[in-house]
Image 1 (cartoon, rainbow, N blue to C red):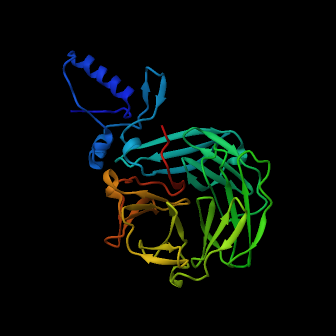
Image 2: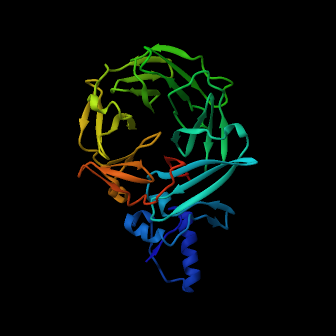
Image 3: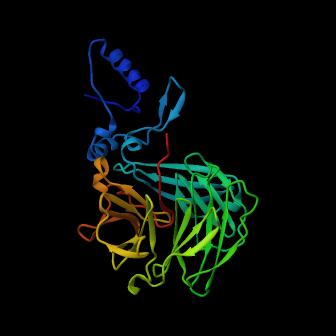
Length: 364
C-alpha cells in the first residue's frame, strides 16, 4: 500500500497515480492511495525520525510548498523558541519544534529596524506574533518574515492581544492597563494601518491586576486577579464587569491565570502547588467560575496566548492534558492522573534564554 504525500485533491491524486504507473511500468497495476489522516500518531513519530522539516518542490507549479504529515493530520500548536541577535544588523532567531519526535527547524531572519531588538512576545495567534518594547508594538510572522508596525502606544499596558489575522481588514489590537493600586484602568484599540491608537479610555476597574485577555465574537474578555471577569465590546466600545471579585480560592492568587477560549466557552487555568493545575469553566447563566475536573476531548496549551485543541481521532493522545513550559523542557499535566509528565510529543530540551510560546503551524 502506498501513502499519499500530497494533499487530498483530484488533481494531486491523479498526479500521484501517473507517477506510480510510470515507476511500476505497468498501466494496469492498481494501487490504493490513502490519506495521511489514516495514520496513527505513533506511526508519524516513526516516519518523522526519517524526515527533515520538509520543503516539497512541486515541479509542475514551480512553487515551494511546506508539506508533510504534520500539516494535515495533527492540528496542534508547534513549540517555538524566539530570541534576538545583533551583529551589525538585528536578527530574529526562531526555532520551531514539531510534535514529531526529534523534529525541529531553525530560521534566522534579518530584521529592518534596530529599535525592534529585544521586543517581547505579547500574543501568538494564526501564526503571527504580537511583540512589544516600551510603547512600540508590531506584528511579526516568523514564517514569512513579514513585519507590520503599529503606532506607538501612550500607555504602559499589562496585557494585549488581537482578534484576527493582521492582514485582514477586521483585525483589532487591544491593550489594557490595570493594577491593584488603582480603581481605574485604561483600554486602547488599534487596527493595522491606523496612524494612532484609539483614544485611551479610562474605565472603572476591579482594582485588580489584569492577568490574561482573550477575544471571542466581537468582545475582548479580561480576567483579573481573583477571577473577576470583564468584557469590552469592540463595536460599541463598551466595557462591563461581568462578575464580582474574589471568585476563586485565595490560595491561587499568587498564580497567574491563563484564560482559554473555545467556541464561546471560557476557562481559566491556575498552577496549584508543584506541577499541578486547577481549571475553572465560566457559567454564563450564573456568571461565576465553576471548578471542573475534566477537559473532555480537549487539550490546553498554556503560554502568553493559550490554545484549546480538539483531541479526537488522530489527536486523541492529547486529550485531558494541559501542556505548559517548565524549566528547560515542556511538560503536560494529566487531568486523569493529577500528575505532570515530560512531553512525549514535545520532547526537546530548550535553553532558558529564548522566549517559548506555542504557535499555530503555517497554512498551506
